[in-house]
Length: 313
Image (cartoon, rainbow, N blue to C red; front, side, top):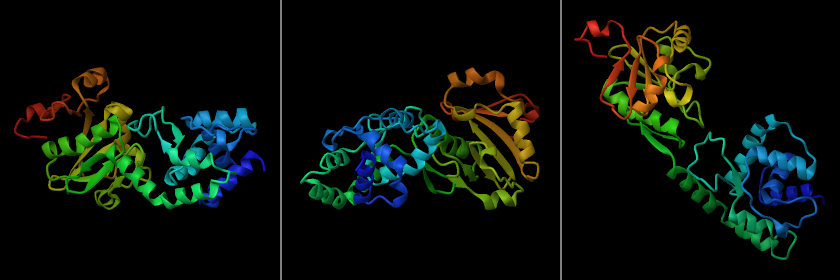
């Protein structure tokens, strides 16, 4: 058999479903094992590779030239399932990397490497049996390891949501648990995205009730809070994603929210004063600024709020 066919046989015996035994899955396994056509499985290694480097390896070692836009196919339809099966680890050299980091890389688990090196040897069956017997335990271990780096967020209604690690999601958690109770007490969280899951929390029903009918979630800012008692919508952008609330962004959101019956307050959220100073010239007038390191204060960008001191935001 060719190396690709041998890899297919291994994936089948490891219990991978048919969709993860196609050519690109086999070549991914070979790249992560550092094997070319003439190498023995006993020589398998565990280089840490990005998706781009995996595609380069396929081209150089097996003359299979996949386009760069195939990266998402490899990530979603190959790597993800290999992670679940405990064949592959994400970011083994830096487990706290954010989900969307350009340095995200993948490597064989130690257990998978040991099994691959036994293929076509007398120890293959016993090694395979041991790997598959501990499969569940390894999945549990992976899940615990992953959750250790997640960011817990408790919504105003007491529900716990867990965000993937990263600077942007840290700021989003601070918005929900720091900004919300101080400036939108009694609010309901209508939307909270995540770098790994853009629709992590979306209250479509409540948004519909106040006249917000969005077909594309990315029209929403990072965090949306609603205070029903005042019929006020707090639209908060975390500057760590697409920057602050600019005049252009206000115009875009006003068009998207043209049917909304709630009053709207736009807020740019920053992790610290240094970040605020870097973006100060871009912030739209008639909007608010909240800085996580000084959470008890808002900075108002002009407008008639100063003429009505009795009305708090």
